[in-house]
Length: 458
Image (cartoon, rainbow, N blue to C red):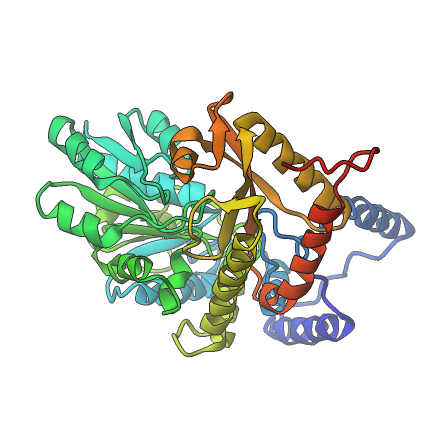
């Protein structure tokens, strides 16, 4: 969302406060606003118009939620200093902010002791967690569900360790019976539980995985990049709630503050419960770490240079919105969840449509009932395109036959996959706008016809 004039004025006021900290240093001349500079920025603004309205409730496509103004302003303020959180020497204030902010994330998951840091996003965060797991269990493989993010299979190839894809149940959750067979017959050192898959929003049964770990020796990593913050709310299905309540038993957790955490891209976080994993990161850099005897963040991260502005933005956001179960932040999450519940209820009232899974968080996936899988896919793509022309931006999801066939909505499978419609209700405003969103989507459904007036949706 664009900053308004009052917020820009606040930024200028805080920039003057920041400048006062320079003390007795002689002032430097600012870069003049030349005609050439103005022209370049104006052309940049025009080029940036070529985007979908990511911050508006009419955008329900990908996992995009606008950063809060406090995060934008704090990041912009810190960028004028341009700190590097690789070491205290490059980012004294923002390194301390990062340690504080990361500690609050760990406390949200029930950890009083931890090791962790911010990074560019969930991919790097998961890479670090899997890399540490490989170093602690050399030669052992990694298992994740077929609905887990594709980066786990890719990262396993990068790490040169075996990867085992575990089938899911009819709700998109990891099938633990199949996993147990794999644990009995293969050398699996790490199991990845996803709390909020990016496609379906499904939540793996983490509480049952914790019990399974008592019978088999494996490291339990939780990819909660999308869903991690939902641990703050109670308005969840009981099985989902049980999974989140088991988070404190994980060995490592990934969460992305640039999803539900109101941050600009990129801001991910990786956390380890056992601080001794710092030994895996051990390296020597005699020219970097010299002004503090404390552990520098660059000593516990694979990335070297990291934007201190991301830490300032997250710290400021957590100051304004503490991670409590009774605060504004949790209330907004509950609104996202309620928007998904209402939207799913609205989908159920249409004979043409079928929910693919019951929504667990705030993602809703549905499909067209049809005689063939190919016609169902074509109908979904056509509805997606027509909705976009009405400024309603959805997403598409390709579901395997094994997931959809038990729903008994397809008579003949001429394709082994079916394209479905998907809505990400990550903005709390979606709840307020739900009547208007449904009204517009209803109009798209009713007004779809070919030139002869025959309705083309199945």
